[in-house]
Image 1 (tube, rainbow, N blue to C red):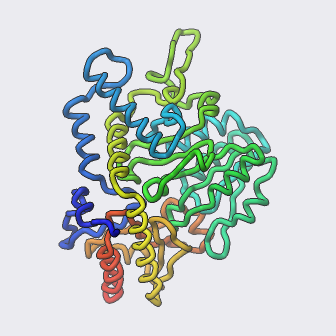
Image 2 (image 1 turned 60 degrees about the vertical axis):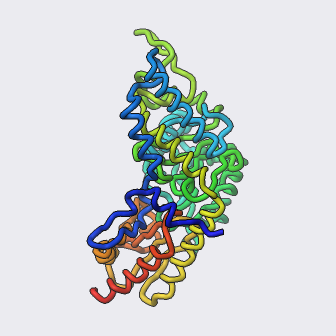
Image 3 (image 1 turned 90 degrees about the vertical axis):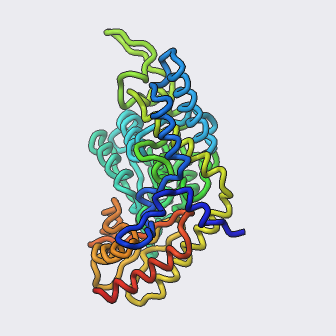
Length: 404
Protein backbone atom coordinates (compact mmCIF):
# COMPACT_ATOMS: atom_id res chain seq x y z
CA UNK A 1 0.00 0.00 0.00
CA UNK A 2 1.38 3.41 -0.96
CA UNK A 3 1.92 5.87 1.91
CA UNK A 4 -0.30 8.94 2.21
CA UNK A 5 2.49 11.42 1.50
CA UNK A 6 0.21 14.46 1.40
CA UNK A 7 -0.93 13.75 4.95
CA UNK A 8 2.61 13.04 6.14
CA UNK A 9 3.86 16.29 4.65
CA UNK A 10 1.43 18.25 6.82
CA UNK A 11 3.48 17.09 9.82
CA UNK A 12 6.43 19.16 8.52
CA UNK A 13 5.59 22.90 8.60
CA UNK A 14 8.62 24.01 6.57
CA UNK A 15 7.49 22.04 3.54
CA UNK A 16 4.47 24.34 3.14
CA UNK A 17 6.64 27.39 2.45
CA UNK A 18 6.69 29.43 -0.74
CA UNK A 19 10.27 30.13 -1.90
CA UNK A 20 11.05 32.62 -4.65
CA UNK A 21 7.39 32.60 -5.62
CA UNK A 22 7.18 28.80 -5.92
CA UNK A 23 6.10 25.99 -3.59
CA UNK A 24 9.21 24.66 -1.86
CA UNK A 25 10.70 21.50 -3.35
CA UNK A 26 13.12 20.45 -0.63
CA UNK A 27 15.82 18.08 -1.92
CA UNK A 28 18.66 18.81 0.50
CA UNK A 29 17.89 16.13 3.06
CA UNK A 30 21.43 14.74 3.16
CA UNK A 31 22.49 18.07 4.68
CA UNK A 32 19.57 18.31 7.10
CA UNK A 33 16.06 16.92 7.20
CA UNK A 34 13.00 18.95 8.07
CA UNK A 35 11.43 18.50 11.50
CA UNK A 36 7.93 17.17 12.21
CA UNK A 37 5.64 19.16 14.49
CA UNK A 38 6.13 16.54 17.20
CA UNK A 39 9.83 17.39 17.39
CA UNK A 40 9.14 21.13 17.43
CA UNK A 41 6.59 20.58 20.19
CA UNK A 42 9.10 18.59 22.25
CA UNK A 43 11.66 21.40 22.02
CA UNK A 44 9.05 24.00 22.95
CA UNK A 45 7.69 21.91 25.83
CA UNK A 46 11.12 21.48 27.42
CA UNK A 47 12.03 25.17 27.29
CA UNK A 48 8.55 26.42 28.19
CA UNK A 49 7.46 23.93 30.85
CA UNK A 50 10.58 22.31 32.30
CA UNK A 51 13.84 24.12 31.52
CA UNK A 52 15.92 22.59 34.31
CA UNK A 53 19.29 20.88 34.37
CA UNK A 54 19.54 17.13 34.66
CA UNK A 55 20.75 14.54 37.14
CA UNK A 56 21.95 16.24 40.31
CA UNK A 57 19.24 18.64 41.49
CA UNK A 58 16.57 17.49 43.94
CA UNK A 59 13.67 19.67 42.73
CA UNK A 60 10.70 18.58 40.64
CA UNK A 61 11.58 20.28 37.36
CA UNK A 62 15.03 18.69 37.35
CA UNK A 63 13.47 15.31 37.99
CA UNK A 64 11.14 15.77 35.02
CA UNK A 65 13.99 16.86 32.77
CA UNK A 66 16.20 13.96 33.88
CA UNK A 67 13.48 11.39 33.25
CA UNK A 68 12.76 12.75 29.75
CA UNK A 69 16.49 13.00 28.98
CA UNK A 70 17.21 9.41 29.99
CA UNK A 71 14.03 8.09 28.36
CA UNK A 72 15.31 9.59 25.11
CA UNK A 73 18.56 7.66 25.57
CA UNK A 74 16.56 4.47 25.98
CA UNK A 75 14.50 5.23 22.86
CA UNK A 76 17.65 5.72 20.78
CA UNK A 77 19.15 2.49 22.13
CA UNK A 78 16.05 0.55 21.07
CA UNK A 79 15.98 2.35 17.72
CA UNK A 80 19.43 1.04 16.72
CA UNK A 81 19.05 -2.17 18.77
CA UNK A 82 21.86 -1.37 21.17
CA UNK A 83 21.98 -3.91 24.03
CA UNK A 84 21.92 -1.16 26.67
CA UNK A 85 21.07 2.52 26.98
CA UNK A 86 24.37 2.88 28.83
CA UNK A 87 26.08 2.32 25.46
CA UNK A 88 24.51 5.53 24.06
CA UNK A 89 26.66 8.65 24.47
CA UNK A 90 25.15 12.04 23.63
CA UNK A 91 27.31 14.20 21.36
CA UNK A 92 26.78 17.31 19.25
CA UNK A 93 26.61 15.16 16.11
CA UNK A 94 28.46 12.60 14.02
CA UNK A 95 31.56 14.81 13.77
CA UNK A 96 31.96 15.08 17.53
CA UNK A 97 31.24 11.37 17.96
CA UNK A 98 34.02 10.42 15.54
CA UNK A 99 36.41 12.89 17.16
CA UNK A 100 35.62 11.38 20.55
CA UNK A 101 36.69 7.94 19.31
CA UNK A 102 39.70 9.39 17.51
CA UNK A 103 40.89 10.97 20.76
CA UNK A 104 39.91 8.35 23.31
CA UNK A 105 40.81 5.29 21.23
CA UNK A 106 43.09 6.53 18.46
CA UNK A 107 45.42 8.65 20.54
CA UNK A 108 45.54 6.29 23.52
CA UNK A 109 45.55 2.80 22.02
CA UNK A 110 47.37 3.21 18.68
CA UNK A 111 51.12 3.43 18.23
CA UNK A 112 53.68 3.99 15.48
CA UNK A 113 53.29 1.52 12.62
CA UNK A 114 49.68 0.64 13.38
CA UNK A 115 47.36 1.12 10.42
CA UNK A 116 44.05 2.98 10.26
CA UNK A 117 41.83 2.08 7.32
CA UNK A 118 39.22 4.43 5.83
CA UNK A 119 37.76 4.68 2.32
CA UNK A 120 37.81 7.12 -0.59
CA UNK A 121 34.07 7.69 -0.08
CA UNK A 122 34.41 9.26 3.37
CA UNK A 123 33.09 12.59 4.58
CA UNK A 124 35.81 14.92 5.89
CA UNK A 125 34.59 14.17 9.43
CA UNK A 126 35.78 10.59 8.95
CA UNK A 127 39.09 11.59 7.36
CA UNK A 128 40.60 14.54 9.19
CA UNK A 129 40.36 13.13 12.76
CA UNK A 130 42.26 10.01 11.65
CA UNK A 131 44.90 12.11 9.88
CA UNK A 132 45.44 13.89 13.18
CA UNK A 133 45.68 10.58 15.04
CA UNK A 134 48.24 9.35 12.52
CA UNK A 135 50.29 12.53 12.90
CA UNK A 136 50.22 12.30 16.70
CA UNK A 137 50.84 8.58 17.13
CA UNK A 138 52.90 7.63 14.08
CA UNK A 139 50.14 5.35 12.85
CA UNK A 140 49.69 4.98 9.09
CA UNK A 141 46.48 6.02 7.30
CA UNK A 142 45.41 3.66 4.50
CA UNK A 143 42.57 4.27 2.06
CA UNK A 144 40.29 1.75 0.31
CA UNK A 145 40.08 2.78 -3.37
CA UNK A 146 37.08 2.81 -5.68
CA UNK A 147 36.05 0.52 -8.50
CA UNK A 148 35.46 1.85 -12.02
CA UNK A 149 31.79 2.27 -11.00
CA UNK A 150 32.82 4.62 -8.15
CA UNK A 151 31.95 2.00 -5.54
CA UNK A 152 34.12 0.89 -2.64
CA UNK A 153 36.52 -1.81 -3.84
CA UNK A 154 35.92 -4.73 -1.50
CA UNK A 155 38.65 -6.86 -3.07
CA UNK A 156 41.20 -4.11 -2.46
CA UNK A 157 39.91 -3.81 1.11
CA UNK A 158 40.58 -7.51 1.68
CA UNK A 159 44.21 -6.95 0.70
CA UNK A 160 44.55 -3.80 2.79
CA UNK A 161 43.20 -5.36 5.99
CA UNK A 162 46.16 -7.14 7.57
CA UNK A 163 47.55 -7.89 11.00
CA UNK A 164 48.78 -4.28 11.09
CA UNK A 165 45.24 -2.91 10.77
CA UNK A 166 44.22 -1.64 14.18
CA UNK A 167 41.19 0.48 13.32
CA UNK A 168 38.60 0.58 10.54
CA UNK A 169 36.44 3.71 10.14
CA UNK A 170 33.97 3.66 7.26
CA UNK A 171 30.71 5.32 6.26
CA UNK A 172 27.53 3.24 6.08
CA UNK A 173 26.19 5.34 3.18
CA UNK A 174 28.14 7.85 1.08
CA UNK A 175 26.82 11.34 1.75
CA UNK A 176 28.05 12.48 -1.68
CA UNK A 177 26.90 9.61 -3.91
CA UNK A 178 24.21 7.79 -1.94
CA UNK A 179 25.95 4.43 -2.24
CA UNK A 180 25.58 1.84 0.53
CA UNK A 181 28.93 0.43 1.55
CA UNK A 182 29.45 -3.28 2.40
CA UNK A 183 29.99 -2.46 6.07
CA UNK A 184 28.99 -5.91 7.35
CA UNK A 185 31.72 -7.57 5.28
CA UNK A 186 34.28 -4.90 6.18
CA UNK A 187 33.56 -5.18 9.91
CA UNK A 188 33.95 -8.97 9.76
CA UNK A 189 37.27 -8.65 7.94
CA UNK A 190 38.54 -6.09 10.43
CA UNK A 191 37.42 -8.06 13.46
CA UNK A 192 39.19 -11.14 12.10
CA UNK A 193 42.50 -9.31 12.60
CA UNK A 194 41.49 -7.76 15.93
CA UNK A 195 40.85 -4.22 14.65
CA UNK A 196 38.48 -1.72 16.26
CA UNK A 197 35.54 -0.81 14.00
CA UNK A 198 33.64 2.46 13.69
CA UNK A 199 30.75 3.16 11.30
CA UNK A 200 29.69 6.67 10.29
CA UNK A 201 25.93 6.17 10.09
CA UNK A 202 24.88 9.79 9.50
CA UNK A 203 23.35 9.01 6.10
CA UNK A 204 21.88 5.64 7.07
CA UNK A 205 19.67 5.98 10.15
CA UNK A 206 17.10 8.20 8.44
CA UNK A 207 16.66 5.84 5.49
CA UNK A 208 16.63 2.24 6.71
CA UNK A 209 16.75 0.24 9.98
CA UNK A 210 20.14 -0.06 11.67
CA UNK A 211 20.96 -2.95 14.00
CA UNK A 212 24.32 -2.44 15.71
CA UNK A 213 24.21 -5.95 17.18
CA UNK A 214 23.93 -7.53 13.74
CA UNK A 215 26.63 -5.24 12.37
CA UNK A 216 28.79 -6.11 15.40
CA UNK A 217 30.66 -2.80 15.11
CA UNK A 218 32.47 -1.39 18.14
CA UNK A 219 31.18 2.14 17.48
CA UNK A 220 28.35 3.67 15.44
CA UNK A 221 27.92 7.44 15.06
CA UNK A 222 25.03 9.51 13.74
CA UNK A 223 23.37 12.94 13.92
CA UNK A 224 19.88 13.92 14.99
CA UNK A 225 19.39 16.53 12.30
CA UNK A 226 19.70 13.98 9.49
CA UNK A 227 16.90 11.82 10.95
CA UNK A 228 14.23 14.51 11.48
CA UNK A 229 15.56 15.65 14.87
CA UNK A 230 17.21 18.91 15.96
CA UNK A 231 20.64 20.18 15.05
CA UNK A 232 23.37 20.08 17.69
CA UNK A 233 22.53 16.61 19.01
CA UNK A 234 24.09 13.33 17.97
CA UNK A 235 24.84 9.84 19.19
CA UNK A 236 27.85 7.64 19.66
CA UNK A 237 27.00 4.00 20.27
CA UNK A 238 29.94 2.18 21.80
CA UNK A 239 30.33 -1.34 23.10
CA UNK A 240 30.56 -1.40 26.88
CA UNK A 241 33.98 -3.05 26.85
CA UNK A 242 35.39 -0.07 24.95
CA UNK A 243 33.51 2.67 26.78
CA UNK A 244 34.78 1.34 30.09
CA UNK A 245 38.47 1.39 29.15
CA UNK A 246 38.52 4.58 27.05
CA UNK A 247 39.61 7.78 28.83
CA UNK A 248 37.27 10.78 28.61
CA UNK A 249 38.11 13.33 25.97
CA UNK A 250 36.56 16.31 27.76
CA UNK A 251 36.52 16.87 31.50
CA UNK A 252 34.59 19.02 33.96
CA UNK A 253 31.17 18.77 35.54
CA UNK A 254 28.65 15.97 35.02
CA UNK A 255 31.29 13.38 34.10
CA UNK A 256 32.88 12.85 37.53
CA UNK A 257 32.27 10.64 40.55
CA UNK A 258 34.57 12.40 43.02
CA UNK A 259 37.07 15.26 42.74
CA UNK A 260 39.85 16.39 45.05
CA UNK A 261 42.86 18.54 44.34
CA UNK A 262 44.93 15.36 44.26
CA UNK A 263 42.74 13.02 42.21
CA UNK A 264 39.53 12.65 40.19
CA UNK A 265 37.41 9.53 39.78
CA UNK A 266 35.32 9.56 36.61
CA UNK A 267 31.71 8.49 36.35
CA UNK A 268 30.74 5.27 34.62
CA UNK A 269 29.83 5.32 30.90
CA UNK A 270 28.05 6.97 29.25
CA UNK A 271 28.31 9.91 31.67
CA UNK A 272 32.12 9.78 31.60
CA UNK A 273 31.92 11.21 28.06
CA UNK A 274 29.28 13.89 28.69
CA UNK A 275 31.13 16.77 30.33
CA UNK A 276 29.16 19.90 31.19
CA UNK A 277 25.51 20.70 30.71
CA UNK A 278 24.29 18.61 27.77
CA UNK A 279 21.90 19.55 24.97
CA UNK A 280 18.93 18.47 27.06
CA UNK A 281 16.24 19.81 24.74
CA UNK A 282 18.00 18.33 21.73
CA UNK A 283 18.19 14.86 23.27
CA UNK A 284 14.53 14.93 24.32
CA UNK A 285 13.48 16.14 20.86
CA UNK A 286 15.60 13.43 19.22
CA UNK A 287 13.63 10.96 21.32
CA UNK A 288 10.48 12.55 19.86
CA UNK A 289 11.90 12.07 16.35
CA UNK A 290 12.46 8.38 17.11
CA UNK A 291 8.87 8.11 18.37
CA UNK A 292 7.61 9.77 15.19
CA UNK A 293 9.59 7.43 12.93
CA UNK A 294 8.45 4.35 14.80
CA UNK A 295 4.81 5.42 14.48
CA UNK A 296 5.16 5.14 10.70
CA UNK A 297 5.11 2.03 8.54
CA UNK A 298 8.85 1.85 7.95
CA UNK A 299 8.65 -0.79 5.23
CA UNK A 300 6.15 1.26 3.23
CA UNK A 301 8.18 4.46 3.57
CA UNK A 302 11.40 2.70 2.56
CA UNK A 303 9.73 1.31 -0.53
CA UNK A 304 8.33 4.75 -1.38
CA UNK A 305 11.71 6.43 -1.00
CA UNK A 306 13.42 3.74 -3.08
CA UNK A 307 10.87 4.17 -5.87
CA UNK A 308 11.45 7.93 -5.83
CA UNK A 309 15.20 7.37 -6.06
CA UNK A 310 14.78 5.09 -9.05
CA UNK A 311 12.43 7.57 -10.71
CA UNK A 312 14.93 10.38 -10.17
CA UNK A 313 17.91 8.40 -11.49
CA UNK A 314 15.95 7.24 -14.54
CA UNK A 315 14.80 10.78 -15.26
CA UNK A 316 18.33 12.17 -15.00
CA UNK A 317 19.76 9.36 -17.12
CA UNK A 318 17.26 10.18 -19.85
CA UNK A 319 18.89 13.60 -20.29
CA UNK A 320 21.80 13.45 -22.72
CA UNK A 321 23.73 16.28 -21.06
CA UNK A 322 23.38 14.92 -17.49
CA UNK A 323 25.69 12.34 -15.93
CA UNK A 324 24.73 10.60 -12.69
CA UNK A 325 27.81 9.84 -10.56
CA UNK A 326 28.09 6.34 -9.14
CA UNK A 327 25.16 4.04 -8.39
CA UNK A 328 22.86 5.73 -5.86
CA UNK A 329 21.09 3.35 -3.48
CA UNK A 330 19.95 5.46 -0.52
CA UNK A 331 18.93 9.07 -0.21
CA UNK A 332 21.31 11.06 -2.37
CA UNK A 333 21.89 11.39 -6.11
CA UNK A 334 24.88 13.35 -7.42
CA UNK A 335 25.02 14.53 -11.02
CA UNK A 336 26.74 16.97 -13.34
CA UNK A 337 25.58 18.80 -16.48
CA UNK A 338 27.88 19.10 -19.47
CA UNK A 339 29.78 22.41 -19.53
CA UNK A 340 27.66 23.90 -16.72
CA UNK A 341 29.05 24.75 -13.29
CA UNK A 342 27.03 22.99 -10.56
CA UNK A 343 26.51 26.27 -8.71
CA UNK A 344 25.00 27.90 -11.79
CA UNK A 345 22.52 25.08 -12.21
CA UNK A 346 21.62 25.12 -8.50
CA UNK A 347 21.02 28.86 -8.59
CA UNK A 348 18.60 28.49 -11.49
CA UNK A 349 16.83 25.69 -9.62
CA UNK A 350 16.61 27.81 -6.49
CA UNK A 351 14.89 30.53 -8.51
CA UNK A 352 12.18 27.91 -9.08
CA UNK A 353 11.91 27.04 -5.39
CA UNK A 354 13.96 23.83 -5.73
CA UNK A 355 16.53 23.31 -2.96
CA UNK A 356 19.54 21.16 -3.85
CA UNK A 357 23.20 21.26 -2.75
CA UNK A 358 26.35 21.75 -4.80
CA UNK A 359 30.08 21.49 -4.37
CA UNK A 360 32.33 18.82 -2.89
CA UNK A 361 29.86 17.78 -0.16
CA UNK A 362 32.67 17.62 2.43
CA UNK A 363 34.23 14.86 0.33
CA UNK A 364 37.05 16.60 -1.54
CA UNK A 365 39.29 13.50 -1.83
CA UNK A 366 36.38 11.64 -3.43
CA UNK A 367 35.77 14.42 -5.94
CA UNK A 368 39.48 14.51 -6.75
CA UNK A 369 39.48 10.75 -7.30
CA UNK A 370 36.52 11.14 -9.68
CA UNK A 371 38.07 14.09 -11.51
CA UNK A 372 35.21 16.39 -10.55
CA UNK A 373 36.98 19.70 -10.02
CA UNK A 374 33.79 21.66 -9.37
CA UNK A 375 31.98 18.93 -7.49
CA UNK A 376 28.41 17.93 -8.28
CA UNK A 377 24.78 18.88 -7.86
CA UNK A 378 23.27 16.68 -5.17
CA UNK A 379 19.55 16.04 -4.83
CA UNK A 380 18.74 14.10 -1.68
CA UNK A 381 15.43 12.54 -0.71
CA UNK A 382 13.45 11.81 2.42
CA UNK A 383 10.23 9.85 2.84
CA UNK A 384 8.15 13.06 2.76
CA UNK A 385 9.28 13.81 -0.78
CA UNK A 386 6.82 12.99 -3.55
CA UNK A 387 6.78 12.05 -7.20
CA UNK A 388 5.79 15.67 -7.83
CA UNK A 389 9.08 16.79 -6.22
CA UNK A 390 11.05 14.57 -8.58
CA UNK A 391 9.04 15.81 -11.56
CA UNK A 392 9.63 19.41 -10.46
CA UNK A 393 13.39 18.87 -10.33
CA UNK A 394 13.49 17.28 -13.77
CA UNK A 395 11.31 20.04 -15.23
CA UNK A 396 13.44 22.61 -13.40
CA UNK A 397 16.56 21.29 -15.08
CA UNK A 398 14.85 21.59 -18.46
CA UNK A 399 13.89 25.18 -17.70
CA UNK A 400 17.38 26.00 -16.44
CA UNK A 401 18.84 24.59 -19.63
CA UNK A 402 16.78 27.10 -21.61
CA UNK A 403 18.22 29.97 -19.57
CA UNK A 404 21.85 28.92 -19.75
